[in-house]
Image 1 (tube, rainbow, N blue to C red):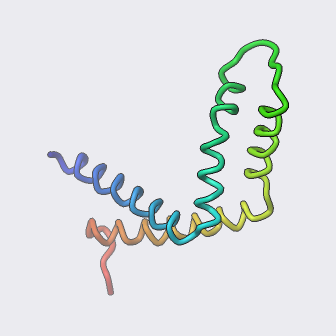
Image 2 (image 1 turned 60 degrees about the vertical axis):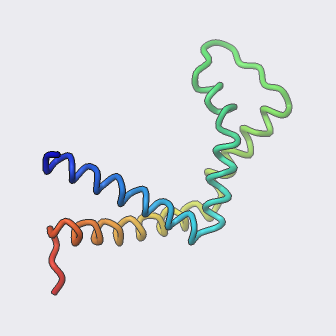
Amino acid sequence: MSFTDELDTLFVEACNEAIQNFRQTDRVYDQAVKRRAELSPVIAMLAEYEGDIHLTDEQRKSVVEYIALLNEPRELEVLVACYTHGMQDCIMLMRRLDVLKDK
C-alpha cells in the first residue's frame, strides 16, 4: 500500500471515528440526523422528479419538518460544535501521521 493510500485510509477512519464520537456525545444532533434520514426519501423524490409535483398532506408535512430541522435555531450551535470537533480530530490525525509534533 502506498503512502497516499495509507493516508487516505487513516483519514477515512479518523473521519468516521469523529462522526461516531460526535453522534454519541450530542444526542440532539444524533436525533436530528436520524429524523432527517427518515424524511430523506420525500426530499430525494423532490430533487429527482422533473415536472409538476403534487404532494400528499403527509409528504408536505415531511418537507416542512425537514426544512424546519435544517433551519432550527440550534443548527448554528450544532455546526459550531461540529467544526470544533473537526478541528480537534484534524489535530489528532496530524499528530498520528507525525505531521504535527507534540511539544
